[in-house]
Image (cartoon, rainbow, N blue to C red; front, side):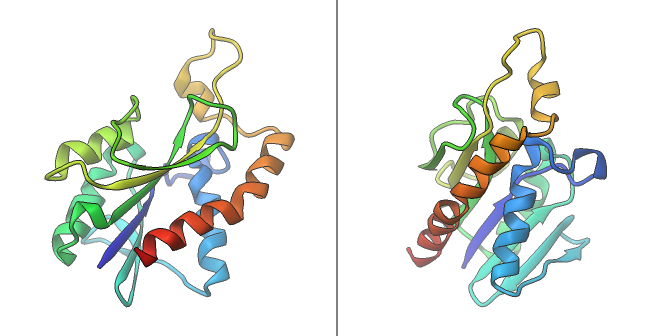
Length: 173
């Protein structure tokens, strides 16, 4: 059994922000597969169990993602090495993508929350970089909750097939 988790903040004021890049990607990924998630209060997440895969979209603030990840993993007896977490990252220019098998949280509070609750750090993650604030007067939280510029949206759309390929590869291995 595998678990794929998209990290985000589920409320409308966070829609289309840098921190919620995976909301858009999840919608497109599931659309292409004719799949829909359904809210499950037991996990505080929208989930879809499809054969040997559980797709999850936690319905808590990103910093509390551990709640859904831990409860789904325990319920379905999913080992951390079979968990893929997709999240935003600010250390590089918009659109860079990397697949990592545990490498630390790099200050990402959603990852910190998951790492503290899982019984080891073997879970995998796909990071998509959303850039850093140009002016350092802007706080990181203001920046990650800001909207993408049109040219950045185009870069991200061009990366979609690469991202989906990484997810598919995770499912096959």
